[in-house]
Length: 322
Ligand code: CP
Ligand code: NVA
Image 1 (tube, rainbow, N blue to C red):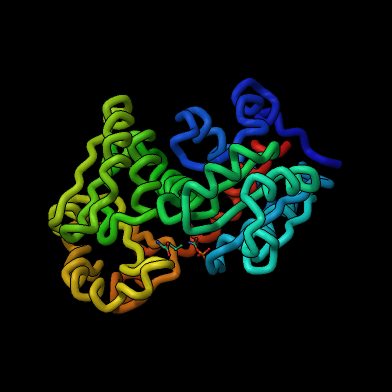
Image 2 (cartoon, helix red, strand yellow):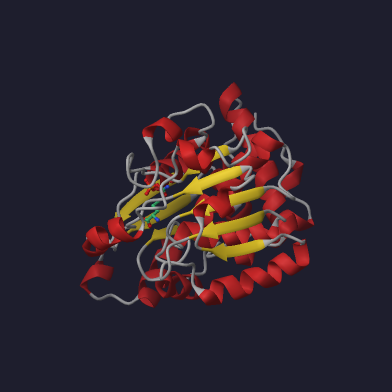
């Protein structure tokens, strides 16, 4: 017998049904906390073996133009645990890579599927797919954003710290897709976000402008600076990501030079709060953006973040695809 989940049927849940998740920007604060709430119920049901096949008979197509370990496995296992079916669609194998338009792909897939997850380079491709598809489209990472990651990360911080408002998150390194989504989600939820990047690698200014307007509403403080020590000072969360993201392979050598002073190591952690959480979306390069001592140390919650991708994305799928 399936348990009833009343929080899947009220006005907030109904307001999410059928929608896309292209950016955390699309979500209100109430909706983000609803995702967290459902994620935590589903996490405890998963751990105690309570069946929760609320998406019985539904299918999720998962289009991948870039590599993935966590996103692919957590979405595929997640939809299966919910009673549905996931289809891995390598972009190389479907007709999209031979020139079939995004809109035809979206409309055709909408006749078979109940939801589409896509990981690709161009953010516009996801926007276009979402506009043309009649089923929910979930962004599984673009060059610009990684909303599922930021939601899972802030859910992890919420679990560990008990609240988010007023926490300081220091993001050290590239102002990339992960940094952008953490800025958007953090500013909405009242987290003070301090990003320290080398000059020329700051988060895009149009994202920062939007983030400032969310911060004005939530009261969070946002800083885009160059000094990692200043960013990490008294931080509750110290976050980093690779210096060369997927698509930046040719810039790797130059980036190693530019980011040399931006490593999260014991010395940098010494200026953060003693109980600061160490976060990384993974995959990590030990010895580059983070030392082994820190990522494998007692403050690291990187495996919890990875696990929470599963629970948070299950909540997202349930809320959008029910
Ligand atoms: N963090 C993350 O999205 O990991 P994958 O690239 O393995 O999916
Ligand atoms: N910024 C990284 C995140 C990987 C999950 C990338 O885009 O490669």
